[in-house]
Length: 153
Image (cartoon, rainbow, N blue to C red; front, side, top):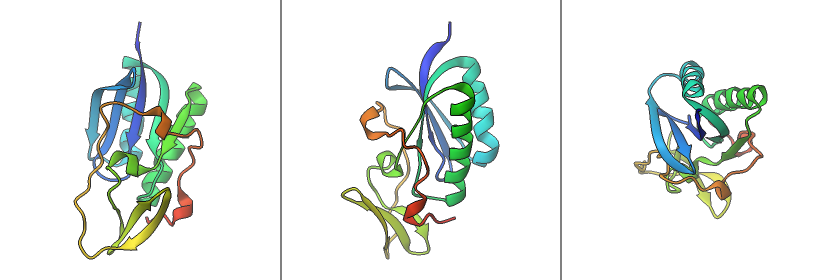
């Protein structure tokens, strides 16, 4: 019998990160420098053979418009086809609320619950990480991408 897990996808930059969570605890990490459009189906297929997938989670922005769009279309399709709930949260959950590169010297920042762009002269060193324990309360079933914040492609 396959172990039941949740999958978390962070596809906003390179590398693409996928976390496998059992009972909200991270048990496996997959990292890829390939394009998300090419690697997501392969990762999903491999993990589907190894585990019973209960829920899908992803960072729905801000970040690369194309990366967000690809992740959403793929994960929403798998959610519908496989009858697996899809949940989302903003990317700041995965980088300790650090600024996220937009374009040039513009960065996405989150102040209170509002996400906006801000010019920063010094680029912060921020990377995305998969949490050791998944906090379900940070995610929403409103999983559509955060296009309204001026995603940058």
